[in-house]
Image: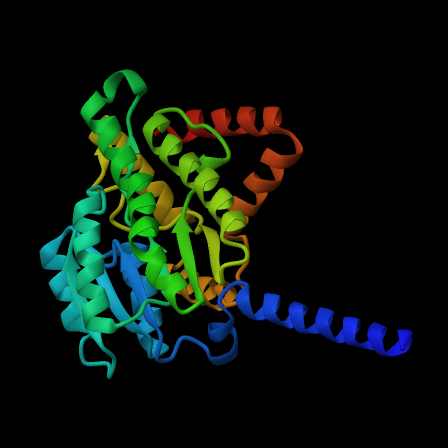
Length: 299
């Protein structure tokens, strides 16, 4: 009898383990890829968001594209609309929760489900704290951080409805280390990190995974369209990104490949990996190196 009971106990434990594995992360995508699933991408009309969109289209994933730039959003829709997938566009400012709720309702009606949420929308800022107005500081936090919060709050019920899904929140190396003239931007990205790491633990048994994405330096229009203390500083930062930036299409492809395993974080580029290791092993040294680099880069 004891042997039978032990065998039953072992079987139940194995069954519970299988259930936990199936419920953790984005297991349907692990098994079948992105084909036929529905992804929501914020900031989808340009830069990294557009590259992620293009890669998802190539994998036959249905898409809801969100962006505040209506002309670029329409251009993206025209580019990807004939790819044999269902694609909808939604002109939304992620800083406003009610607008996000309205978009969520539209997406639920159009697509019926959401399996992947990519919170990518962001605003760049390179200005000294004293030169950054309260309105500008709040705008950066509203888009970069609260845009992520609003996205998660709006779409989480849809992700949890069918017990599977993934949230990808885009952060930055400035979540690890400070940088002069990046007070607002660094604050927003550090907030994303704390929020995402906590939310991942909170949702661990819900079937929804949360991943932080650190894409590394990229040459996109983010700095060009963002806040800058001077045009000279903006030009220097853009030049640095052109020289050091990785190919955005390659970054998007590698990110989506790795996302299928529901990692806690995805770190791209040698620069970011070195900075990550330094910040962990010797925060003081990392801070000095960052300060030296800022003085040399002059932005």
